[in-house]
Length: 163
Image (cartoon, rainbow, N blue to C red; front, side, top):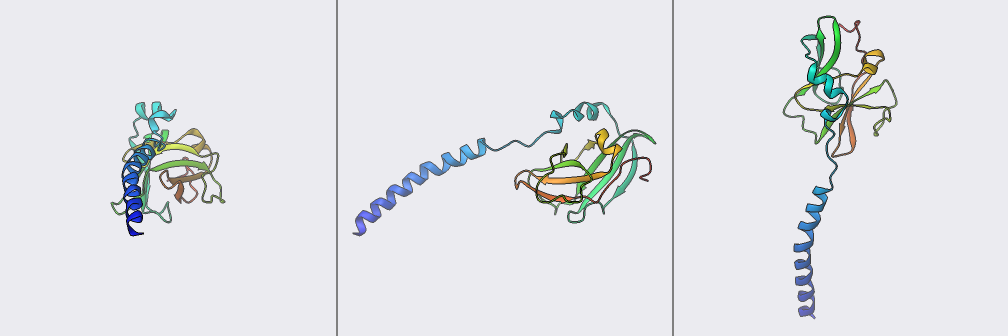
């Protein structure tokens, strides 16, 4: 009785030794890529636009995430806006990307359909679309690996009155 069970166990372990690495390789290859800011229409603006003027710098924009937000502008008082996000080393979220959405108080665990991709959460400046400057809204930190919203900012309005 024990010998047939040992033989079956040996065959199952051998099959798993072959199947698991193959399944792991296929799952890594099938993983969705992180959207790049370079593939968006804003990439042309970010490549040519130099943001020299800092409008403000705040750490209280996000309530749950320890993220520092800097609002930059091309020139003092004129030009396009951009945000620069940074966080300490203790803030580690996988595949974090940044979206802009028109102000919506009912943002739940899913990303709103009107969300605009700004780029990945990495060192660098993320240009804001014209819709973000014209109307108030929120920045959304979204983890692509977890497929969940990490945090949403307080309502923000990027215009000349934000000083």
